[in-house]
Length: 365
Image (cartoon, rainbow, N blue to C red; front, side, top):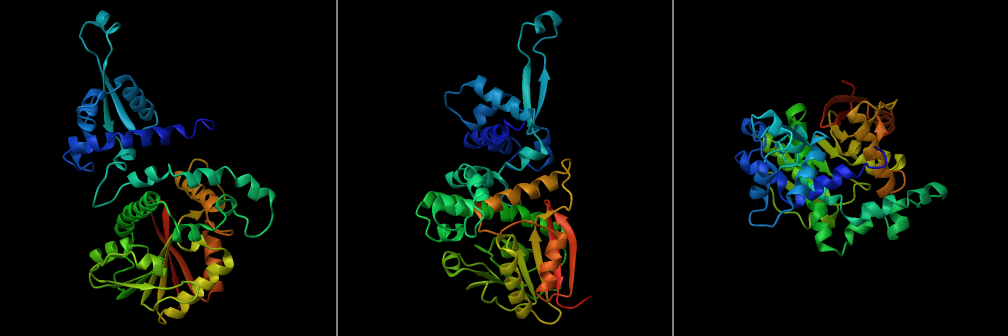
């Protein structure tokens, strides 16, 4: 399993490029989440006809990819005999059909809840892979400012993003972040109700405003302030109910009733995280709160817990790609940083999509 760990993502990416997952969506009326999708069971030939009409297809290759992924619960495989003659069945290939599972439904595009399509396709970009290959050098060089990404590219990730010259790579990155945010926000808004009493919500590091768009659509009384670096804000499109403000979160943040930060504090070392949280504390009213969304590491790793595995894999990515000190943290470590920044109460409220929603309050409730 360790030596072949990349096989499943590679096979999924191949089928994404062949439009196979979308074929199931079309077979189910373009909605992979309805009841019809559960019963959409297709042969490899039917999949090929829907996904790649008019193309010359190696059906043996396609079916082998489908079967391998079915062994990992990406598809559900069923087999029916070709004939009622038992003797003949031993000589004639059975009819194999494949259907979506909860895993593969995530790989069919959905404008409402998002999908993981763009996240999977972004995996192919060269800079994550080349960076992973240099992690051992960072381990052997115990000095600051020597993270793997900088070893490879000569600059930090944020500098790289600000001056990225490959337009296609930049578009894939932006699309990946948009899709991931849409996917996560759908789950968060189903589970978390802490926006109900907020009037002005500041999204620190809000990117293109995708998270705020989802929040203000659910809670139209909220005035959203999308805050990010000026070059990010300059590329944003207008959104109803959302104000766009450029600046540096480590200097100051705009004022609001509440501050929302998804996948932000894991970008920074402890000192800069405390500085950021102090800026948030200063921007809030007395009864204000910060809503933090992050993966939270367990105190003891549980190899049977998929959420724990995901959190540790994300921590590996932070180690490899982001600035020195960027990391996922335990609930205890997050609480310690919040208290150091002046917050009086820190509560883990709920989990959604393996993410934890944490509230930091200026006053003890």
